[in-house]
Length: 115
Length: 112
Image 1 (spheres, rainbow over the protein chains, first blue to last red):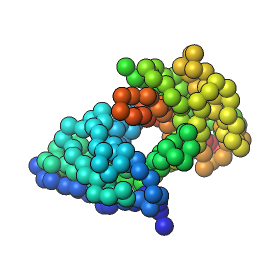
Image 2 (tube, rainbow over the protein chains, first blue to last red; image 1 turned 90 degrees about the vertical axis):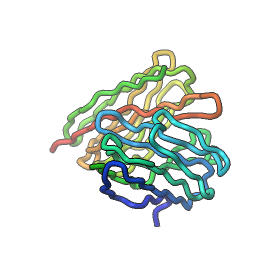
Image 3 (cartoon, rainbow over the protein chains, first blue to last red; image 1 turned 30 degrees about the vertical axis):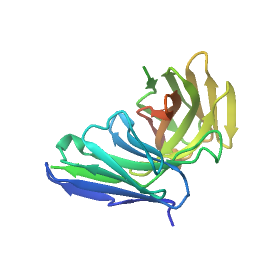
């Protein structure tokens, strides 16, 4: 079974709709992240959480919100979707106690299309 | 500010060696990562450098020069399955925690 899972894997929605992307992990990591990936721009950080009570904005948080329901769950919401939020979204986890390098482990991604 | 530059695309031949360069500018450098990402899949960790020098791991090696803000990923004995994007990423010390900044990636095509 995958350590980091994302649902849904693909989603088509219309402008103005509210949608939620969910991420779950069985790695026991405290730190979780949401990124979006666009062609030619690489991965950009939307929000991150270092533990259940900690939520931080990344470089492109406008138009997004998150919820850390438990150590294992971190959800990303688009309150009112717009077409330029069409992208591939990745959830990731890390654990600073595992190694100094603190590798990030990525989920399989959610491909979102906003019409 | 923070900036990471790497070539957009490279092509190499099966069995050959290829070097993918990465230059970066960051205010609080605390390590450099290389990730591999096959089309439509999640990035996966390849290597990590925090001190100057070469780190070797099988067919893959990664080099870092902190004074030059420069790294490269060296892939030897190329195989068709090495066709993927290679992401250079820098961890930056920031108030409140560490952030990892990703480059746009280098798409490598391995031809027979």
